[in-house]
Image (cartoon, rainbow, N blue to C red; front, side, top):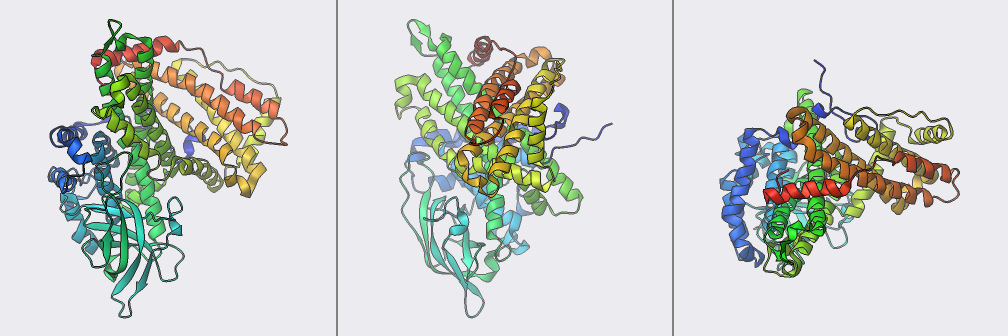
Length: 593
């Protein structure tokens, strides 16, 4: 039997994989589905009836909801059993994040507590710190917050000015500084705070308890969306932090922050799925109830287009989230087998997929943006009314393009990380690009693909060649100044993002057909057909935009012509495909893909 082999982070640009070698949502087992249903049940019984009270930030309410979710074990899905958790896989914790993502402002508090609030201690804490804090975090007795951002240090986190000076007796660090946009900060008992020790140029991290003298918490910020989540500024005035509360090693804080951000970006891809699926269900419910011109509005093609595209964007995101999450789990398992402790294995496993995490964060947040925007449009005037939940969904989704590093920063990371990975692997992008250009000028062999999935794979191979061609050309032309060419890098990042999501969907649909047959897979082929067709046109424009932006470079016309050929795909009756997708949604009256 051939051994299953996962792709390493970024290798999707250079290698292909088999459908049976990726994880898809249809592979979830009974225990995972039970956790998902428990999360859904919690939202139904405890959260949805209180949305207005949550948005009004009723004192003590969010804290009590976190505690109730802790009583069900939902705050410790990824935490080992010795600290009162469930010790589940990364895929399972992603599934819980997805389910809770439908919880509006509660999902923000939940994600902040279980992710950036808890995981720094789980992954970097020593045994005494874990024993002291993790059981209380898992139970919800002590809510958690993560304090990194400062007024002049957002995306550039290491520019923070907060300082920690070792006391004369060596027993405390004296912490001074200011943090802002701190989620859960108004009620959290435990904070992970980043500051520079003495004259250090890099951050360190500390576990800080909110009850300690010298901590001043400002009133709640007034926000456009996620109104029910606590967001505050926190001031530290000569706060005495015991030396034993240094998290990790001195100067390790920036690395801690970076690795937690990788995790947060991946998890955000799952969180937006829960919000998207709920919003799609609300959209189709309304379309099946609202009549205009004597017909349900769901029968109109204009509405069917919107419903179908909502489904397509969500299904594509989901396929990519769980493919990547499966890779992370396999990486963690391999690293443990090599002798790593699970916390270190988890950190390294997630870090291997930093590129995929960045593109998932961008694609997922922008997919949700489309879903909620069109939901408001489907609801019409009622969608603009605060009486409907799509109002909350619309406002709440906007922050996702800023959370976990702005989408602009993450787009730059996609291109930058790809180039660095290529250099590390010894893959000469410039040489490869020159090879493609030479190939363009020579005779071209026409190889006809055999079969539906092979045809799609051929298209995606060509998309990859465009990405690698452009990466090589711009690396050669701009070299050390490449990071300044942000518009061109955005073009390339968008190409990489769309080809990875297209490939992830191709593999999922192929695996579905292999497992359940062609009839069952037909609706998913419609999704794949439409997305690949649209992606080809998008990549064509992005590639030409990048080429046209390169001044004084030879063979631009040849490159544009090759991009056109590499993005030529078979015609698709997208009207009929979208209609079939929408009709299934309308018949089911809920997202059920």
